[in-house]
Image 1 (cartoon, rainbow, N blue to C red):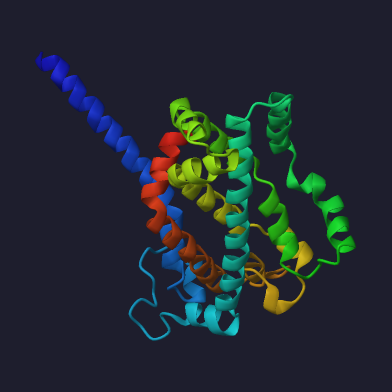
Image 2 (cartoon, rainbow, N blue to C red):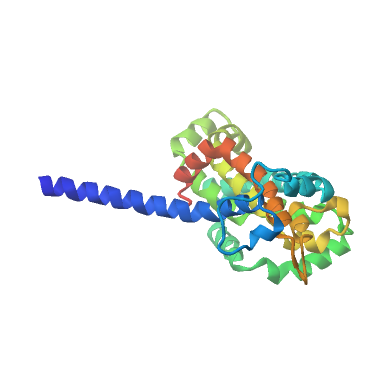
Length: 282
């Protein structure tokens, strides 16, 4: 009995040690990035490296952030990214929920084949379709606008469709049958029953889509040329050139660009955990 109890305690301690090591490994790059923003340019690459920033609690401590927010207009870039990512994520929730509901609760010929083709599109990289997409956007005269950044993500969401299909398929049939007996149409069943109970799954999908569109660099670089329309990812590239990089400004800009994502995650954390648990997404 004592031996079994000791084995359990050892297993628990080993699990905690592995989790703590994994957490430290995950957090360390972000912590190092924040520390570096409070270092002078000469101290960033000093050897041996120091964890204590040389500008901490000294004049010039926030110079990197002040330059990034004022001289390099990162507040405007962050607002542009928030608009693009927010609109794309909201649209993706709507279209993915409609498609997920149709695949999960409606029976029509070829639905399994159509859903398989939809899933197969996830294996096509964006780089393979970006040239015909660029030609289409040029034909529509959408270049140097936000439409090429919003519309493709607004209308297409394979992961979201899969997530919501799994969630909607788990809803008891009795709930749908009761609504149909009360005279509800298919759209009323989707709107009044399935949408209200899928808030955790849709919150998870919103965060995934928001982060994906916030971090997108390829489409903004291709489609945006006006300075005032730039997103935060294009803004970060301005700190690099062929001769080197302004690491203190680049890292300060990276910290500023991450803060909105952290705020969204903190407020939506409860729904995200619940959504992952109910949809089975790992």
